[in-house]
Length: 303
Ligand code: DON
Image (cartoon, rainbow, N blue to C red):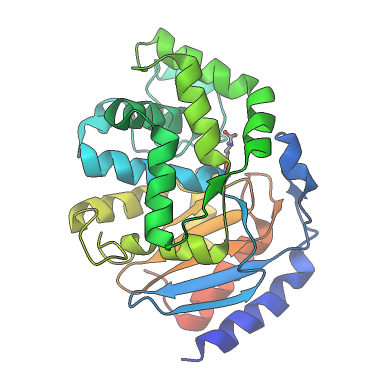
């Protein structure tokens, strides 16, 4: 298969979509990114990497970090997180408060913001430095020692993070935080503000395509844990658009409001796309179109 040819063709095809949707503005510093950027990278299970467009340009990983914080918590402490967070699609926006109150402080899944706050809280208890552990994992798996927090983005989010702060306090009021609200929020904002390229992210998520085996060849997750993370990505990774994402792309995937999406073809490869303009559910418009074209061309959907 001519993978490079397929990626070049996809970049050309989605170029016209970059002005559909809009760049996230609720975190002010994210709104300064050009919507015309687009990158795609495929990392094969054997480590071979293909890329096209802006695949080496770093961007804000935002909610993509939630895959890695969940994987880390599961690697330390297999199952206990599921007593504090459900694993069902939410059907509500990623930052919805309503459902958290109705569910009495147990978030619907680990990828909506409330669930990710609980995961970060658990990781903070387990490691003493949740954002630092996520960064360490991402550096190790991507092979890029320069993966770093963009302090401007972290400060911008902290300065406008009233909704996340409200959710953290609501979680605490239900006894579902182990650490002080401010510590959990600081770690969460920092992990979301990590900057990485499509290349870094495709390499860093390869363990999910390799049944838990890290880039160094040692097991990071068990095959069963890797299956479970992929399953939650499939059902919850793109929030209340997870059904549409499964219909169009047919792969486990996780989006972020920086415009990135990580998708996994179990046993074969990981794919990362980046297009900053988002649709109404907070997912990259060009990114979803590119992944749709990718699985159509390769016939590598899981279905
Ligand atoms: O907490 C937030 O709102 C952001 N740091 C992350 C949200 C996000 O990326 C949602 N994904 N599409």
